[in-house]
Length: 158
Image (cartoon, rainbow, N blue to C red; front, side, top):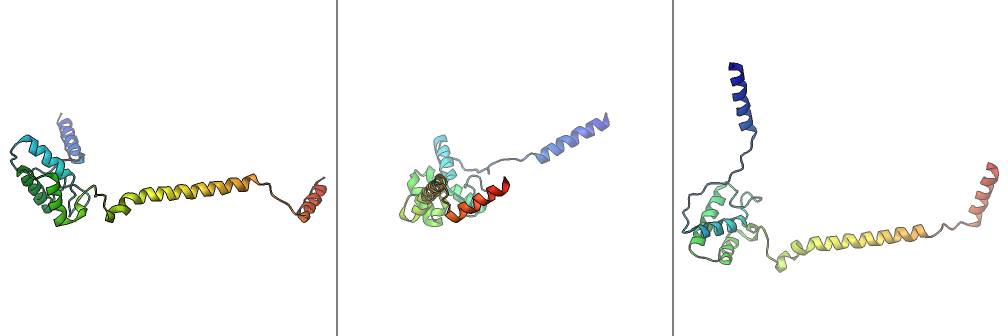
């Protein structure tokens, strides 16, 4: 009985160590209402942490992300619009803080580059396949000398 309890407790402990906890940071900010809280969380999820670079500021545990979260929460509670908050963040941290960069002249390559590469690849594939079909459709032309060699080889085989 004692070995069974030891086995079960060690199994539970191993299971607890193996399981990965996916938790978001707990902020102790009191919102004016539930709508402001949801709005602030949605807006904070659209902003990238300048330190972590691949997490939004809600999921990041860095001190910078915590400060940014608090700032977003306060600005939403103050009644600022999304554009005002985003402008404030981009003026401090640049366009990098936006997960979805704006379509501007400096981001044309970012937005249109994949489409241009896809079209270029399609054109290259089209011309390559067209050339392959043309070369496969043409019968091979033999010179008189080549025909004579083939005839001699065929006579030798008989």
